[in-house]
Amino acid sequence: MIEIADLVKTFHHGSVNEVLALAGIDLKVKKGDFITVIGSNGAGKSTLLNCLAGSYGIDSGHIRIGEQDLSHWPEHRRAALISRVFQDPLLGTCAPLSIEQNLAMANRRGRIHGLGKGVRRADRELFRRQLKQLGLGLEDRLRDPVGLLSGGQRQALTLLMATLIRPQVLLLDEHTAALDPKTAQQVLALTVQLVAENHLTALMVTHNMRQALQLGNRLIMLHGGRIILDVGQAEKAEMRIEDLLQKFYSVRGEEFVSDRMMLV
Amino acid sequence: MTYYAFMGALEQGFAYGFLVLGVYLTFRVLDFPDLTVDGSLPLGAAVSAVAITAGIDPYVSLLLAMIAGFIAGAVTGILNTRFGILHLLASILTMIALYSINLRVMGRPNMTLLGKSTVLDPLINSGIGVFNAAPFLFGLLSILGLLALLWLLRTAFGLTMQATGANPQMITSQGVNTSRVIILTVGLSNSFAALSGALLCQSQGAADVNMGVGTIVAGLASVIVGETLFGCRSIGRALLAALLGSVVYRLAIALALSFKLGQFSITPSDLNLLTALLVVAALTLPRLRRKVWRR
Image 1 (cartoon, one colour):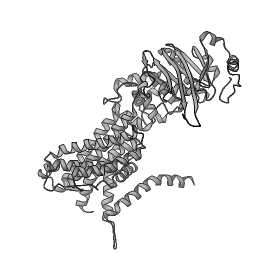
Image 2: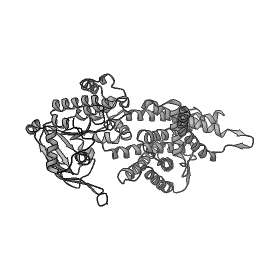
Image 3: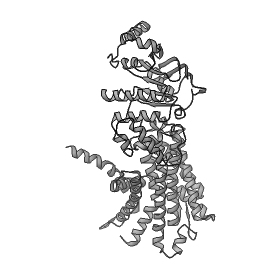
Image 4: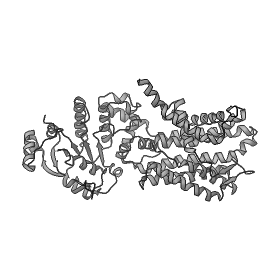
């Protein structure tokens, strides 16, 4: 159970460039929810995820996971509960280190990285098995530096790393947006598979409305730093893209166009 | 070059080897340009000289020097991470402060170890020869230092050191406090620099408050020379290249000092200029080569 209460975040506070990025977000996420998050540019989608992960401090409000209030925890401490995949495929993995070394670091997420051997023999077996399910042949390239992999391969690896230790919540920030369509489809399928297999709670930001409707059991739409639409599974299943646009018009009374908003 | 000059260059190369390994750690692994070493190397010399003069065992004095160096480096790391001061400036501040501290430690600008026991005594007494003792012992110690670093970089903590330099966002997402890694790594790097200082003062027989001038440039030059000559494909290879780079650099300096052209000869006071030119050349040659290639 994740509870976000009256979350407010401003950038450039007190200057002429002040931007109210989150204007009081209230959101209760049940265990096992897979929520897709949509909204136009500047709606606050990425800011919401960054505030959850702790990359940005918050102005006011609360973030709770279970019994723990992590509103003011530093980012590295939250990593024990929260894992994430970034839009940039290069951000989630460490290029000069090998595949097995990257996985070894992910296998210690939220634990002590001490003076024991970085990659143990027993780890390798686990990594091989886990990599096999990606179907990319990475299980035979454990010692290759990650820098040699393609963007899609690195994003698939990042996904695996984010779920190697089961997170309380998985944050996906447009994690297929920087990939070519075919690779994006593969990474998306892998996302669905990993979320289902591990019964993960996930928040996925996307610009693709069809994706937002197809995936997950709940959909929220942000605009101007507020949640303007929150639909559950039943209602979502009946919705079409036109309905989403309709909803948007009726709530905001503005034109909902953006070059990054894909209609198909 | 005479045999003595050659052995002298080896001695210096291995003694500075620790410094170069430390510089490799900050510059290459952590991507943290750390100038603290200009102060922590003489700090190590000062601490070791004072300790030996006070009757402490020379080997124990090495340990004390390393602890002092670690604290100096940790201060730079804290200035950078906790107080948000730019890494380069943070290290310059510590370096400047260390000049005063080193004078306080010794109580005067320089301190001689004439007649005092040093780490070299057991070897010299064994009859290996006065000129062979230092290169042999320092070579052995620096190889041990290299192996220790290699081990460390392959531990779980070592992986976070490498990741902190290469992708801080990634390693933060894995629950690692990068500030702590930076403080510990810069501290470790400076404990190596201080160890170099301690060894140098024991083999030269004196500690001097000005012996640290230009340390960072010499260390960087050694790292770059090593990388160019011996490659850096793996961590082990890169560490070995740094250590050998230190030896090659000292040999090159010994060669330069024996250079004579009529009335002109290179003096030790020219070495800072030469080293700076060497680093500039090493850093710009690859770029020039690419430009020429494209034409």
